[in-house]
Each structure stands twice: as C-alpha cells, then as structure tokens.
Image (tube, rainbow, N blue to C red):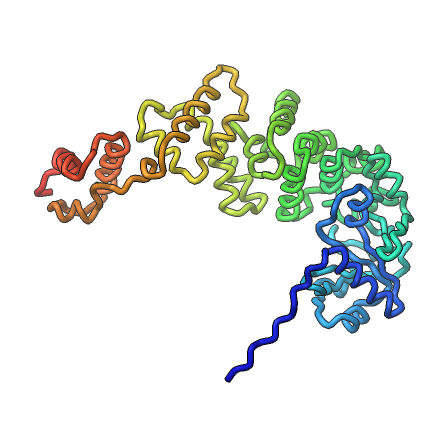
Length: 416
C-alpha cells in the first residue's frame, strides 16, 4: 500500500513577514541585508508593496548555501531568487556595475558596500534601503527628500544612468505619471538630449514600459511627458505630432479608466487604418490577441456609423462579437463633432441590453447537413445560403422549420 504523501502546511504569513524572515536568516549568518528599491519607496509612500527585493553583503554562493531552494536567475550579476514560504524573493549582492556595452546589462560587476551599491540604481526614490527589523531607512542618495518633494531625480549624473540602460528614460516617465511627480530639471534635460537613443532598446522592453505607463495610473500625463521629452516620436512614430492632436489625445486619455493599455493605444490610434494599427502591433511585438483587440476597437467607429440599426440581423451580428461591448465603450469616448456617433452608441447599447442570449445565438433551423438531406449539392454557395437563412431567422422571419425549408426552396432548386 502506497504511503500518503506528506503535505506541508501552507504558509499563510503576509508577504512582508516572509521577506523579513529571509533578511533575518541572512543577518543570522553575519551578513548585512536590507529591503531595497521599490518596496522601500512604496512603504514610505504608504503603499503596500507587491513584492520585496533584498540587497545583501552575502555573495551568490553564500546565499545559495544558506537557503535550500534557490534559482540562479542572474548569478553573474549577483542575483539569486530565494524560494521561501511559497514566495520568490530576489536577493542581490551589493555591487557596482562595470561598463554597459549593450546599453542594458553590465559587462561585469564588482561586489561592494551597501552605500556604493545604491549609486548604480536608477532614481533616488528607488535607491533606498530599509532594515525591516528596526524600520530604519538608509538613504545615501536623498530619496526620502525627493519623495517628499514629489520629484523623479536620477542618481548621480543623469546621462550616465541613461547610458547604462536607455529604458530608464521611459521609466522616468512612468514613475512621474504614476505617482504624480515632476521630473527634475537636470534629469529631464538629459532625457531630451538623448531621446533618440531610446531606439536602441528592444521592442519588447519598450512595449512593456509603454504598456505600464498607459495602464498604471495617469496615462494622460504619461503621454504628455513622452511628447514634451521628445520620446514619443521614437517609441510611437505612428502617432501624429501635431500639437492640437497631441492635446486632444491627452484629453481623451483623461476619460479612460486606468488599467487597460490596449484601450489607451486604441484611443491614440482612433482614426488609423487597419494596416497602421497592425503595423504598430508587429513593431512592438504585441500578441496577436492584443493587436486584434486594438484593431477591433479602432475600426468600431466606422463600423457603427455605417451599421443599419433598423436591421435586427445586422445589429445582432455586432452583438455576437466577443469584443462588442469593448468596441461600444471605445466609441463612447470618441469625439463626436457631428453628433452622429454618440446617439448610435446609446441606441445600440439599448438594443443589445434588451436581447436574450437565445435571441443572440438561436439554434439554426437549417444546417449544411439539412441542405444535403433536402437534395442540394454541397459547394461554396452553401455558406451564402446559410447566412441568408440565419439573417432571416434573426429578424424573426422564420418562426419554424417549415418556413425555413420554404425559404430554401426559393433560394435553391432541388436538382442543384
């Protein structure tokens, strides 16, 4: 008889307690260890962190020796993921980076002190350390003052931080818009001067940063900053650079609930042709599903303006689209100078709200197999016939199978 597998009890402690335990274990082995980066920033700002990163004097080998479950996700850069209490924590050895040939990753690293470690980080608000056992914050870069001043400031010389990783220019925009902070003058000037270099960042990293900027909070402010700092023309060249259009874009983004970057992209591309929309999706390596969501929203205005709302079959077919309500939500946000679009949005919404799921997708009276059983030869024309039958059924013109067969007889000859 097979012995039952012993199940370990689930560790239900809060995330911060598990992270603190990791720090305590490192301390117990005579290593320095602190919470680092965004989790410290968030705690100071009164926001509950979603993850906790840990910085330590322990080398990667010492971290791996101390914890039974680890993953060397970047050991050459001093980064080990520690699995503890059912969670994963990045534990990074204090380090300084030696040159950045690819504009993203250091060519090599040297292990240093905690004070030297924070000097390699991007912005002062992300360069803070915290002792979770005492609550003491170690601030070697002026990050606490910048949080109080609501300021995004690069650590050290801004141009050097951006040379190390060009994506940091977009990160400055994201943090500023997300928190409602201003970008410090010298940091902003360095971005303006080096904006064109953002093109060296991979499409995937650019896409992810833009997505977070448009989804995390104030998308309108983020888009305004992209334009003011000269980044938009390089990361979203498909969009108009006309001042009036940029102003309208920002105003429209203000009306969009946060959390859906695809909806924001679609607003910015609201009158673009399908080819341009799909081209942007390919350039930024978006998934096929996201590109289709974007294209479907952008095409909704023209489709709705030409939709025959007196034809029940036509508007039911609109309602069958899995993205039907997304498309209507998109149209509801669009400018309507001729007062044509918004009345149609309200009318179609009302029509779709009153129809049942059975009416939306009724069981067809006639199928392809039925057409063959009635003596008709199958072929490409079957699709058109079945579509015609379906439209008639959706309009309520075919109350029963007999009426459907009679319509088939009108459309097709039995000897076909």
